[in-house]
Length: 103
Length: 256
Image 1 (cartoon, chains in turn blue, orange):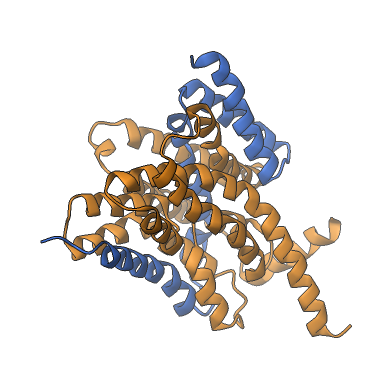
Image 2 (cartoon, one colour):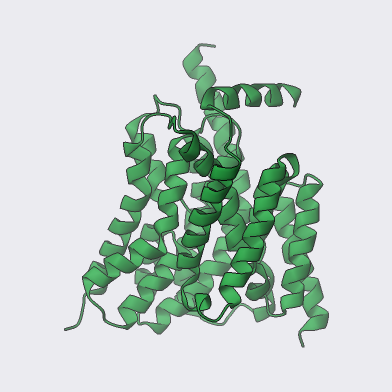
């Protein structure tokens, strides 16, 4: 049996939307439970950190360029640079280093 | 000027800020969506279908997982399950976001925001102090979604037109943004700093250890997020109600 691509896409979209919208619409009050509150406080930092490394090293052609971008990005963010500057800086580091590292 | 007008100009300014912060996201999306388009083409999607997949899903790992289901001609149920697993982390993010809405936020804003809770948009939304203003996220979405959807369509059409060097450099834009989100709080809060480092190490180990590496990146992200955040919450509970958090933010804002 061949499946319909548009039906596949519709199912994907419906499930994805449900995952995102149900917590936003169903959780209407502040969670008072201290553990849950703390858990949700830490979630964004942990999840973004997990997704950043080692993915940044695997994303570039040369892992060394990715590692350098990670180091430069951390230093720049530590010094208070915003979203756009840090992200452009990381791209520039990779681009310049790979001029030498990748032939 | 009455309150409504003040809110309107306030929201317009916030919307513009969202568009500004949406630019690096859009650039990163363009690169990722492009490579996603290449994958979509491989499983037989045309440019319109690639556009549609991205426009309706806004999820890189989730869409990629979905494409593998299409390639395998697997059942619709499998498609639903695969999407659920690959995107489960958005459930956590939406739970976190729900806590930042002011309680009187209208349903329409909750429905609209639910359209595009992604790693990046979640990151910049949660990074802003005080109760969540959906107009900020709408601004970012307005920039990010066209980049994401058309980027995928472009990838289907133009496969390997962008030089590899450029793709490689653009591919770290998203991670640079993640760093700009997690490092400033880590600087202020030692527990966050420790857990950022622990997350790096655990994620690296999970991606390299022979058994664990077999799981998809999405699954590893969910499991590690659950374990590490639960550990942090159990060992170092945060003593903050939403009210005190808002007050802290007031003082921060006044200092600006």
